[in-house]
Image (cartoon, rainbow, N blue to C red; front, top):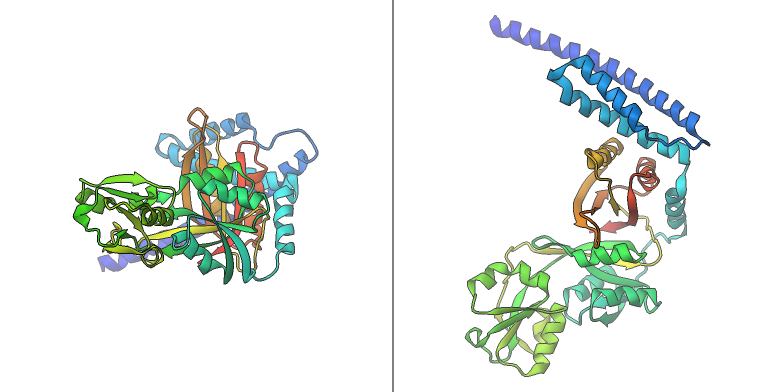
Amino acid sequence: MGTEKKARGLEGIREEIDAIDEEMVRLFVRRMRAADAVAASKRGSTKPVQDPAREREVLARVTKAVGPELENETQLLFTTLMSISRGRQRVDIDGEGEFARSLNAAIAETRDAFPTTATVACPGAEGGYSQQAVSAMVRVPSILYFRDFDAVFSAVEQGMCRYGVLPIENSTAGSVTQVYDLMARHDFRIVKAMKLRIRHVLLAPRGVKLEDVKEIVSHPHALAQCSEFLRAHQKLRSIPAANTAVAAEELAASGRRDAAVIASRECADLYGLDILERDVSDATSNYTRFILISQTCEVYADANKFSFMMSLPHRAGALSDVLVRFAAAGVNLTKLESRPVTGSDFEFRFIFDFEASPRDPAVIRLLSGLACDPEIEGFTFLGAFSER
């Protein structure tokens, strides 16, 4: 009998909550309509969207009304409401906006399917992971090899090739920060991306044994992905190189008998090297994300992901204001990372990846609002693309 009474009591409370929720929805709609009216009154004027003094007044009034017990929760609720209102107002005032126009133009001008043949700038040499990524993303590629990431950007800028391929993130070692810095410096877009399984092996010239080796040469990210193996062999010095495949090629040509490289298995046959140790990666499931970049914004029909960067003001709640907008648009953030801005006084650039269709009006509205937000500096759209 007591349990039945308790259940009926709980059911009654839930019914009360449902009724409250319905009333809150009606009030929320009224508030958004009022915010739209504010935007209409500001359209064509010089009045800014955000009025900090007005927002402080609102927060002071509502927190006083609820008392100390619910003060923090009330501030969270109303700062979220005001953030949503500001986002709507900015898009309403600015109309479609330059961002939306340029994205829609790119969608209209891009062919439905990615080309089956293309010339691609690639860091490193034959047998490298970047080359494997190119071969996976372009059915019949013509590959031009370059020494470093900066040279890949330059090759595309100079019209030597239509695309460039670059590693952007590893599941063990994290983001390739140099690539993000170059993306911020150059006006490029991501047109395609993929995850490639990385299987590092230790290679040496024919007949060389592990006990003969004094140095291990590889790209810094590859060395970081094999830290456990290197710790287990502390007598071996780690020497950074520009690229794993280039390191293998140069070792094969050097005649050295005291060095080894960490590279792909393909490099063993290509450069006549022996495999001293297999699977030297820290993790058995080691993946690197590669991106295909272009100077032109190309948005293909199968695009399912967005990427962009921006800097936020130094104030409490600046990042949460942006995250609220993503939640309101119903999109799934897959990456959020901060990078210090070179030469700045503790200023950070945030990198965002999220899953969405470039044909979703809510997403375009979201990004248009961010692009025209005067508080946001250095909004850089990196691309809308497919990733597999």
